[in-house]
Length: 396
Ligand SMILES: [Zn+2]
Image (cartoon, rainbow, N blue to C red; front, side, top):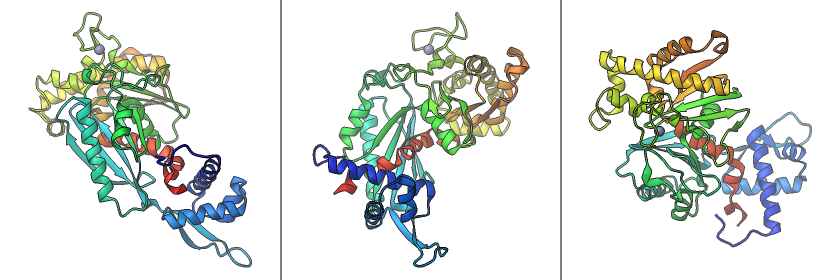
C-alpha cells in the first residue's frame, strides 16, 4: 500500500490516532466528536482533525445534531457504508465465487465463474482481472476496494507462506499464493485463509451462530475439511494446517485417497464422494441439477445423500469426541443438501454416541448456503476494517 517508502514516526502516530477514531465510530455510530475524544482518550483537536479528514475523503458523513445538549448541540458523525466495497472470493476446485459487499458486509452482488484450469497462476490472473473490473465498476466510491478476502480449498503454511500439499489441487503445492496475488494487485489489502477457517469466521460473523463460542465448521465443495472456532479464535495448529480431518481414516482398508492414505473420511462424505456414489461428474450433472433432483424426490439422489449422511455422521462423531462443540455447521456446497443430510447424520450419531454427549448440540446447514465461505472472505476484511480502511492512502 505504501508507495512512499518506510512510514515515519509522525505518520505512524497519525495512523494510530485515525485507527482509534474510526474504530470508535464503527462501534458507537452515530457519535459526536466530543464523545469519540472521551472514549479514546485522544484530545478533541486530534479527533476533530481525523474526523474532518474522514469527512473530506467521504468515509464519514455528518448527520444532524443530537438536540439534547445545552448551547450548541454536537454534530453526530457516522460511517458512510457506501464509501467502498469489500470483496470475498471463494476458490473451489471447479469454480470460484465472488461476493461483493458494502463496508459493513451487506451483500451488493455475487458472481460464480467456472475454473478453467488447476494451475495456480491461472487463478491469480483470473482473480486479478476480476478485481481490476470491480475497481473500474466501483471507481465512483471514494475508497474503492477496501480489502479482499481470498478463501482457498487448500491449507496455507503460516510459517513458510506457501500452499501446503493438497490432495485435490496438487499443482498448488509450495505455491506462494499471497505473494503472487499481492504482486499482481499492489494497491489492495489482500487476506488469505483456507475454506474451513474462513467458513467458521463467516458463520460466527454473518450466520446463525453469532453469539456461539464453540463451533466446528465442516465444509465440502469437493474435498472435505474442518475449521474449529473456540471462544473468538480459530484453532490453526502450529503451521496453520489443523483441521485436515478429511484425511482421517474411517475405513482401515478403504478406498485409496489421492493423499496416499486409504479410507479417508473425504472419500465417503464429501461432494466428491457424492458424485462417486451417483457414478457421475459435475460436468455431466451440475450441482444445481443435483439439488433440483433431491428436492423433486429423485430416489437415486435421496439414497446417495442418505449414505453420504451416514458417513458424515461417522466423521462428525470423531469431531464431537475431540472438540465437544456447541454447534456443528455444515458449509460449502454440502450445506445445500439440507434436511435429508442432517437427518441422516443424526441417525448415525444416535447409534454411535451416548445421548448425554449429544445434549445441547446443534447441527445445521449454513443459511448462507453456497455464499457461506465467501462470507468468510468478507469477514477477514471486516475484522481488519480500521487498518484496512486507513491504509496509507489517507495519510497523503
Ligand atoms: Zn486422504
